[in-house]
Amino acid sequence: MSEKQNDSVPESDEKVLSITRIFDAPRHLVFEAWTNPKHLKRWFAAHGFDIPDAQWQMQPGGKWHSSMSKPNGVLLKMGGVCQEIVPDKKLVFTHAWDEETGGTGHETVITVTFEDQGEKTLMHFHQAFFLSKEVRDDHRTGWTEFLERLDAYLIDEVLQ
Image 1: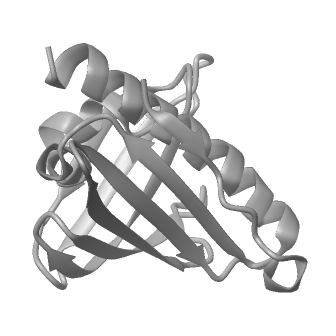
Image 2 (image 1 turned 180 degrees about the vertical axis):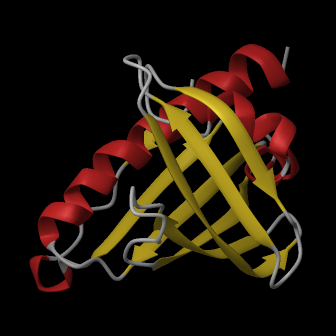
């Protein structure tokens, strides 16, 4: 079982989200789970959501997009552009929700780093800058659920 750790964000930095988590899996596998669509389709959504699509062009400038289907059938879409990829160490990409009008919403930048922690992986997740503390807090809830799904996926399916 992974150690769940959510870093607190100082009140003065209310437009930044930071989450730190230790996964009971080797760094290479955790990085691959973040970058391989085969794996993303198994965990890249909040609890109770299906993942009908997850595509990544894994190179700087490559586009990514994913969709999540709510239990009531409502489809939420998101995407962005990969900015930096350092195999097994770092992933930087933009993130924006698709809007019903066909455009994209406010864009943030996500940086995920991966470090060996013995046989485990220490992952740091950083997303900035949000329009408000409330939006940041909504994303904290969502990303925490994404990461719980990743943890379960790694333990129950990848490492078996």
